[in-house]
Length: 208
Image (tube, rainbow, N blue to C red; front, side):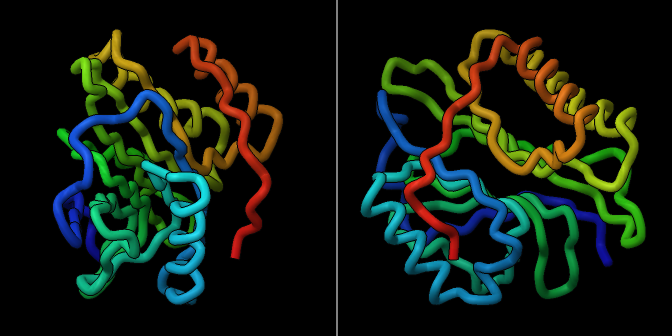
């Protein structure tokens, strides 16, 4: 087992667009390694989402990455931040977009999870609108199997990162593992501190 080191980038071709459009769709999905377990079904579903909703950003958690991985849509680049990196593959969060990415930053949890002692990884990706206004998208897979104090400390890491970009629009998406009242309250307080609004999800698609 190796501690994750670098963000992995893979592109089938150059991104199709330089700037974020005024309106766009974003998908956030914990795929639980389905891109490796059932790649045909995964690829078909990604194509369906893109065709139906014109999705510009895919924020995926619990993805598996190997050297052969490419995102199934042409003109999309993927950036992968591992929380567990082995010799021939890695597990972590993947953000894919057909818009030029200007900067990426991995936010690796300071603490490790119970039993396997793995970190959790989040990924910050920076883009621009046509008027040069920045957009930061953070793909989160929050730490699990730890007490609320540690959970709060790890969420604080995201807050600290965003403190360097006080005027940038921000989207935070992912698997927050906020499965009890205390964790949910911490996430709500975090969002309120950043004056964030909850995006309502569409439910017309069923996962594969």
